[in-house]
Image (cartoon, rainbow, N blue to C red; front, top):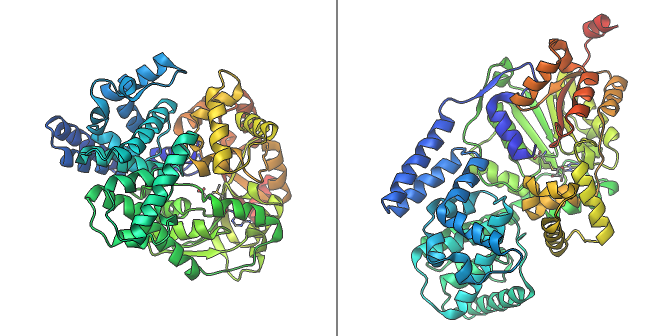
Length: 543
Ligand SMILES: C[S@@+](CC[C@H](N)C(=O)[O-])C[C@H]1O[C@@H](n2cnc3c(N)ncnc32)[C@H](O)[C@@H]1O
């Protein structure tokens, strides 16, 4: 289960260990469906602006990514293109063959696709292929000087936003790269000379390179643009510049251990996870904890999805969120401001050096982090030393068994010598797309496969440790920690309960080991669990 799926599971009620219950705030899913249906009727009546506004609302209100993608794939125009790609495979289609009689206008009329491209990663091999071809077509249209109508411009602008979100993971041909570099130079020159710049030139360049890397890019902001391009400039110029300015204001809590430097570099280059939509609702958790003024430490908060989730879940808590990547922290701080939250403090720190911190916490969360440390056990011990008596930890660790396809993918990368660069990641993905069978084929079903930072985190990680349940059990025993339960989707918990009817089995790692052996994909995302320190009275009864 990837992070997005985990969050969907959380919404369905499994964020807490098995015993606790959760439910989404009433009506959030219903609102998304309401806006989606309304948008569909506006689209049918050719009220395009209204359709786009309500489709966007549906996505922002938490429409599930999988259903969103399915809706796009089932659209006759898109389904037709995908069918033609599949029928001709592997022969590349001409634009006329690919887009059919309606041409690009048929795709541009799909308001939902346009909205989705701006907000959600596209996770479908056929759709990725179609969009990659569409991007090449846009490149050609800049030279044509042909007129592009508003809908087509909106489509190209949304496509450029999608490319930015996935960090340019779509593989271009050498010829496209040459053309795109030429257009980028042309754009820079026109900016420097204050010459006319067509909106299409901006969208075409932005679909291949992030605009904020252009010299004098601020000058783009002084010009008047159609709304479609304005939104693209917000994403690719305003927001990245805001993050860059903010980096200097991020407080530093510790030095960075030399052993953490390669990992730090990876997450500076490719902050993870990439995410756009702030979850719309806090959960209604039926446990007193949500009302408490807990001190929470999020160790390795990444780009803030984790800390913002925690802040929404525990609105009365004081949260300290730390990470070794300043780029990730700057993104997290911008998204936190955007969410209007003021109970999270961010700081630059290395978990391995946090022991000297003069603060203690009721809850400490380290999800997807400890297994990237040079010495995970040492890092875990540092965090335990910061826990108040009676506190608990939420930990996420990779499962050796569940990551079989990823291990095979890493072996393929090592064998072929793919470097952890954009070009290496693109080339590796293309090879994996072409694999007919074999365990690596399963990688294309994982969300992280569809962005550069996701793929780097998933397959190219500079340092990853993996665990088995017996190893975790030994660590817990050595550190006198009580296992409180796994976070899993309700259907998995139901399957477990069907096999082991005794409620105590939920917190018995031997039973879970048996269950995992029979269901090896159970912890595909990670082992995510809570532990607490044994109290005197607990240990007395347990002996
Ligand atoms: C896979 S991301 C997980 C982010 C977040 N916990 C989540 O679940 O979305 C791992 C994060 O751990 C951070 N990290 C790795 N080693 C660290 C260390 N020694 N100290 C602090 N953060 C670290 C990385 O910079 C990265 O942002």
